Image 1 (cartoon, rainbow, N blue to C red):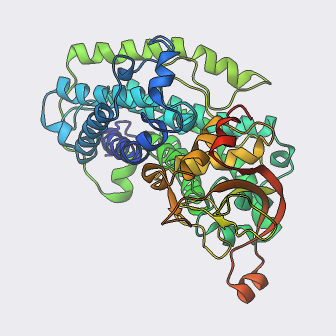
Image 2 (tube, rainbow, N blue to C red):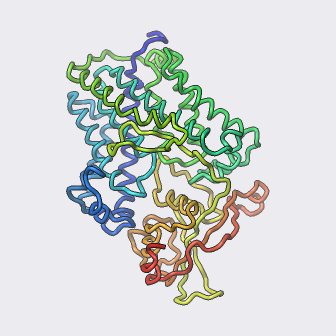
Image 3 (tube, rainbow, N blue to C red):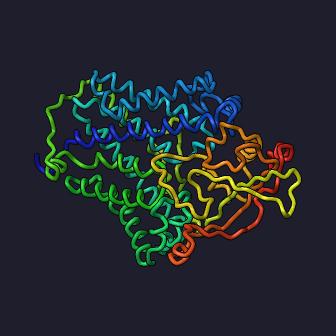
Length: 480
């Protein structure tokens, strides 16, 4: 097989396996967190949300019925089917069975996302749904991968990368003067174990990071539509850039999804020439299946009109779905970058009437920084939804969200379900009498400070975000 061979059986199969794996992670996250955040007694209960929305506004299986037990059954079906897809078990049957399994995965996850409200408002949810929808039309492993679907996946990759590049150039000036990375490793939503080391690299290193990012997202991405092997080289460069981001921060499955979507840019000819991997004899697609792929292409063309207009707009939207089925979305990331890291720290006290001498103990979370001597953990591709939303809270200092009030109320009860969302409860035996939310400026320690104190972070107190409150006061301040 030559370098210029343009079949995509190997990369198309790898794409399906990777999407199946991301689906598995997404359903496991839902299994562990959804009912705690959004269940019948969650912070944003789905039953209350469904009372004010219609199926047209939020297409979801749960529009017909919701209970925590029913959700549990749905999510376990998703876990089993996604594991089967990741392992290739969906390839053992006929074409219609493979399509049906992939369609179910898309439909089940769509049902979760469309009732997930604040906690499912991230761009990677839509990216998974769009990428997962294309997987329906790639067929089982014993069949050749339709070229038209490969092109559609490349179109998704193009929108992801170019959208991210344009939103940066149109957004924060620090992207244009190459200074964003001087502080982004420190201020990103959830640093990982290597973020401290990345942050302390010299300025030329950070400017090189930013410049390379622009070259990939604004330049190289156009080459994925070039003849082979140029398209494969462009796809590989995009994959390398995403692996760089995986090393430097916790971005849930965002980067892993982009890597998966970049797989189909690499042709069988390039893979065989480099790795010596052969392509087995495969069957052609049935006529009805080929017709379905062209119908899909026509649908994507129509649905691409709003995203293309958005890419050309000076008021470009970032991570937006133009339809409630999350097909052919617009993407982007970090159009603006915070230069300082402000963190909310939640504290409790056993004193019914707190005074100057009251002891306030801090709640510690699984991913977000609180304890100064705790090294940032590796979380991605897993997603800690509460921790991520807490990062957004200081960015809107005059609009305390109702879900945060609900969360604090549950801490005052030592609610067992809610406590599963955090790492450390400082009141294991008896709930606190009062809670408060303090605001701090967090910074990475310098290498010298790290050596002297063993701490990864240092912080400066900025003031009270939410004053000391008991259950009664929280109940009366849901609109705070």
